Image (cartoon, rainbow, N blue to C red; front, side, top):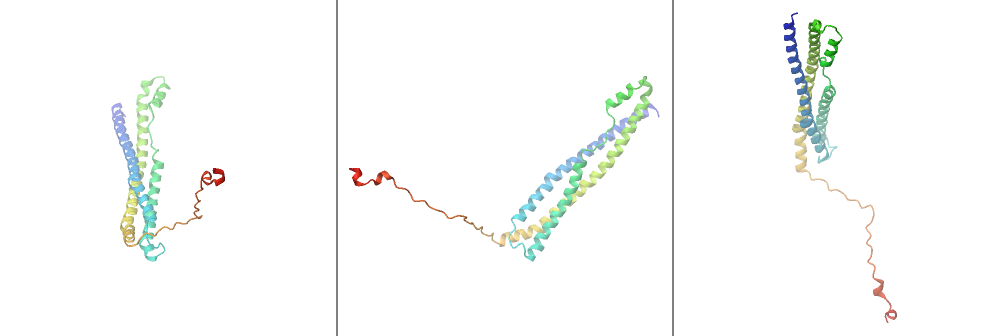
Length: 207
């Protein structure tokens, strides 16, 4: 292969590698976006609706219209969280071509560096190609996981808003909150005021 062809392929491989690296960074940003703008608010909404629900929790109607949908919403949210956890675990993995220090070491091992320039360029091109192929496969898998994480988070939010929220709002409007009973563990004892002894002296002592 001619030197100009190898140089052109190296330049093209470098551009493709940077494109895959940018895709890798975009996946990390989308993962962070899902955590901050989707998973965290839904968790807060689930906890709030569950702790402030009014009515008999053992009622069949409340179980069907609120608690079962809430459980489904939490299950879908957990599935989305599993995909996000996988993405966070894989966020540190990216294949890289040889560093310049490794290339310099390769040249220093040969007595005539100019004669092995074409071989070094060809080897670097192979390393770039292997890194690009591996990163492409990883990024493609990560993109699918991000998509599924977004879908399950959306399904969880849809169940929460369309099934749980109406019943919660209905009970909140029509059922008064239960008064909290205050239990006094010990009786309140009022101590009598002590009179000043100087004011109660005997008449004989005053004279």
